[in-house]
Image 1 (tube, one colour):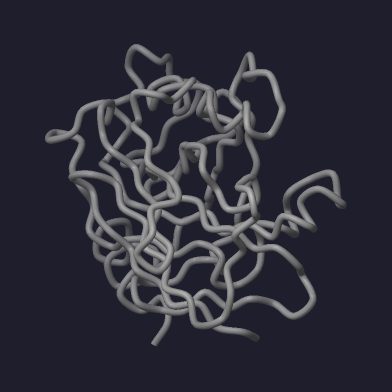
Image 2 (cartoon, one colour; image 1 turned 45 degrees about the vertical axis):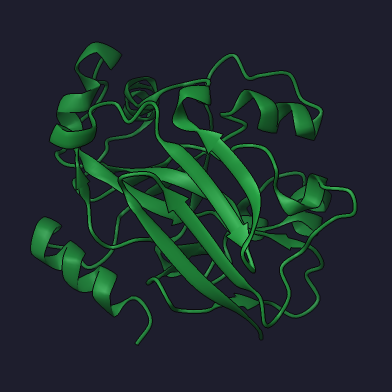
Length: 228
């Protein structure tokens, strides 16, 4: 039954069953960039995930065989509400329908050995996501929201969207300067520090785990973890 709830929601709202684009932002929290050992970016760092990564709340994250360390990452996701190209940041919220809670699951070994992130971020089930859109009218630019990841009940990540380097208007404007954003497209805004790979000792997802990601006033996604 994977993805069926999400697909029904998207079909009703956007006349499509899945987003055309999942645009992701790397290193968009100061402390997360620092735990990577990187300087904060001077413009948003974009990469993508595929719609085949999406699963509903409660559906499992499947750990592919032989990929090494896999992390969960809590993220605020922006839902685009209308077709837009090259919109300025001052008007960018006009293009936003609302927000979701997302988990940008990442295979770290592949991320760093490949030198780019497509394979590490692109496995099926690597984007659990909430299904009910928190409307833009209630949340505005989504600043000041707590973002939390819990693994088996233990808090790993605990941040705030106040810590975003580039906020929602800047991200929508930047992405739309590169490609046309369509209704139902998603922008995952980045993750705070505390991911398992940079903890001492490292904490990787394992079969039998339960991962919970939560964005305040937006939603919570709980995912069991299973082996392939």
